[in-house]
Length: 111
Length: 113
Image 1 (cartoon, rainbow over the protein chains, first blue to last red):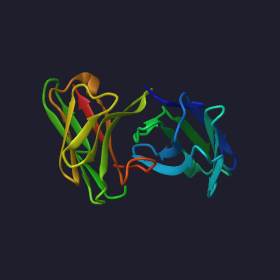
Image 2: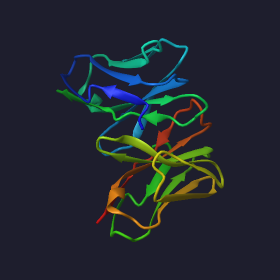
Image 3: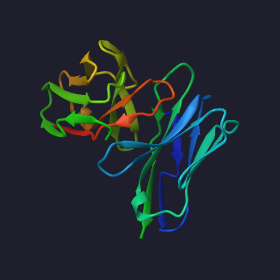
């Protein structure tokens, strides 16, 4: 069963707009990662945030983590058509070093 | 794709036949994983390996077996393929396991008729 669940399932925006997607999880985590998957390709790692961190940035990406709400958000600023992809969160919890993936958010950025 | 190849990339087979998928890495990473991806389910772990000859089951291991005789190769075998095993299969690797980035292969699309 999935630990993390992304929301919304699908998101459609115009180029230049910001895109926000969320991940909620059920049990305490050690860390949370975000991945991107372009159509027909494997997943690509974007960013990892540890349970004792609240915010991380990488280029146009901003990830926040609220452990009290058991949720994380991924913000893509000034989106581009090339950002069109599915985005997945993956959580690692307890003694397991195996990340558990959610079902993903499908993002479409219209030029 | 970080030195990970999967073969074959596409395969069509019939119910009841054995199928082996291969994952090959050139990164010398210790951990290797097999996932399947299906619409509405995201990625689900089938089996993983934490070293040569060291493997363990994942969430959806029934009907699958794996072997790892060399660091660079991780084989996934469907002993007797069923239509429910029609899916896209991804191999992933990571250097140290815990809290580590996973690098994914390009995937194998398997269709079982």
